[in-house]
Length: 432
Image (cartoon, rainbow, N blue to C red; front, side, top):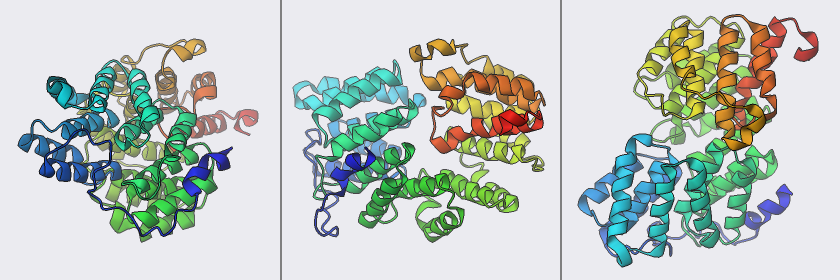
């Protein structure tokens, strides 16, 4: 099955060096007639797809100079929804209003983007249906595809994470801008469905087309981690470090992968050194960076590694974050930090923001939401050395634990905690 899905991206297309000019406007650009707005918009799109630079700020700058640029407004909507930036709801509303006010001078596609972004305010699922419909009708719309891909990931739709891009890429070839970006998306969907050989092949092809493409580097790190290729993974990340360590949205996350490779080699000291130098960075206050920090320290705690004041310092950073409307995935990682640091009251405050969900009726809510409270209860129990309660909580959700709102590598935290809890509880059968 995976081979069939990858065939479209693997068909012969001639010399890969014949890549289109970066600023040739694709056919889906929404009625942009200002050359400066178009050029800068394509730059921002490049950066948005490559997770490079500060595309949101670039888009705001374009709109400051060209407030009626429909292309820039659609870019801003996509950036906000893809990045789940709830703090930017006012900017989203402003861009929707600008597209609506443009009326017939804005393309139908632009109005579809505006409608999809408005649905995001009501939830990821509704937004995904709308962005998915755009992609189905217009598979060259890389902006809609990038948002749908991110929403599939957040919602744990692993099959669609693979299949949506697989269907779209049949309409693509190297003559289209951003072909490397869609190859990287397809590779990630394949990796998350266990098709590691195909994922690696496409990710390497994307890197050949666009050297330094961080999403492709990220896919290869995942493949090597899932296949236990720690030595190769460390060498690969070192060889490409100049391309990922600064100036892109994957910098801290790829450092996290580096630390995981060290843990696969049982080199705890090296993993801690990576944490201190590349992950525990106070100037990176976003939730994803803090989640990577929590996930790594928790893995080290499971190994009884002495962590000094690291949990306390990380908890200080979590305490400064607004968590009430954060995704459950991030709240779970905040609870991990608070529980490990002995800040039970802070952990309980976060726990109380998570609804109690009937797991037997989890289809009525997102799997991420259904998992969050039981996993938090398990982490709190583990930190309190109540391993029986930890085991009980995780057993109840073991059938959906691989859909935590993150990647398979990130969802492994529950599995590792369960295994260590069974060992400490001397439950030999469960541990085995």
